[in-house]
Length: 266
Image (tube, rainbow, N blue to C red):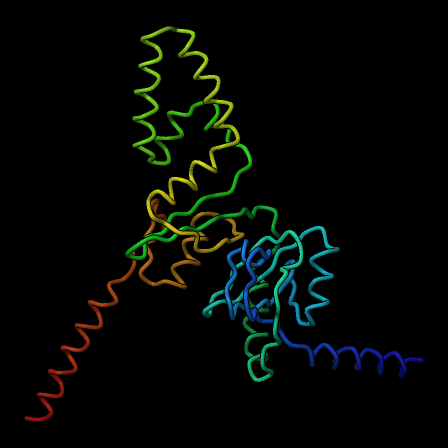
């Protein structure tokens, strides 16, 4: 009996070791993967904090049946998480076996740093010119936006809409007090649920385009992930240190190399 059980366990381990990670082959318009802002060649390395290696069919079963659906993605030597609502709706390919061993090791090390997802939140990242990024935390309702819209506009540095809103309220208040009161009630009702739409619209107005979604602990964590992908990244509300002057360092290095070659030649 014990020998049979060992043989079964060994067979299962061999089957698991033969499985590979899944990589995104191509994105389809209207797919869930596209709404999560995943990209071609992104590699899915984990589901709900555990290493995932298997077929696309098994992945779809996980994303259909499990209550929590947190996918860990590997992109450009960087790990990050996204929160899925179901199957991705795209074609996935198996990663080559020569890449699996090293990727498995680094993935296990990354997932060990995640204890649970209780304090994690969803973020949307928008990218503009000159490596400029804006990060929005997804919230269904905003109490601050509803009760104190002026403070909310100032907090998010939406100065143009803030000035327009103040001018509108002053105008309505000068006509009749009930117009001021009615507009205030309408604004608080709208802001309670429309704050996110307003922030997204302002990003698009500032010529920022949707870049990626991240499921992370804090705004700082998101900035660190982006900095790992883009070394020159800058933010509207910076929390981490400014980017290093990579170009300046390269120019200085080139000058030193030229001086050394000149010295060696003489």
